[in-house]
Length: 225
DNA sequence: ACGAGGATGCTCT
DNA sequence: GAGCATCCTCGTG
Image (cartoon, rainbow, N blue to C red; front, side, top):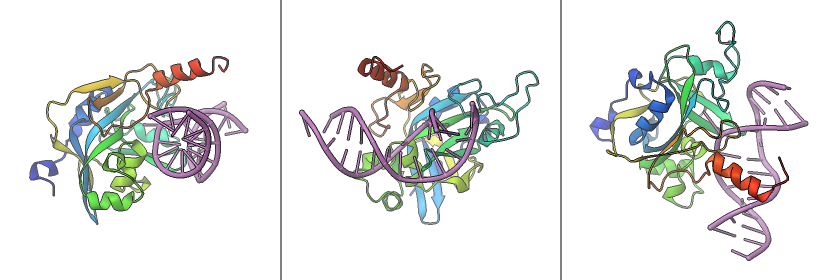
């Protein structure tokens, strides 16, 4: 069961800021999903920020340069909506990834939730991910955590300041030490240090920061460009 | 422990 | 047709 203090949600003002501020601040808060099978939650231990004019961002190139108008087409349009709404999209044709929209309406930005430390609703999580070998692997990745929590396309654009999906106002972990790396799994803007994680937490994802991954590839295949 | 490869569908060229 | 904000399995050491 959740303690009462963790049933109150972060408000919209919290997300009405640049993603690079929201992303580290979310660490230590609970991500909660009140499902019909029970309340499932986990501590946010890893996030990434995506910013306007960021070449790795879905919203890149969507603003028409001379007019400043947003082209009202495609999935990226929802990234310009009001803050604190869910932006959920299909990755590699198979996995739903959960983002929170940041910044005021008209400015694009979001925070990708990359890993949670399971907190409540273990029975539901194990049901959702029956073939997992250990608690560590239950939700230590952006695709894994949506499966564990039962989040998919149907919650796209839902308001994350209220049930059924929200972030707790109170932190479960206080005084978290935030570590910063480049983001994972991207090929553009790989130098931006916009991945945030709780230092030493074993529930963070096993991915390799993109600048390190690129350097390794170059060392291994010096001929490929 | 690690690395290669496949699954699978949407978006943009 | 290429390129993905991924994950899992099955090889080899």
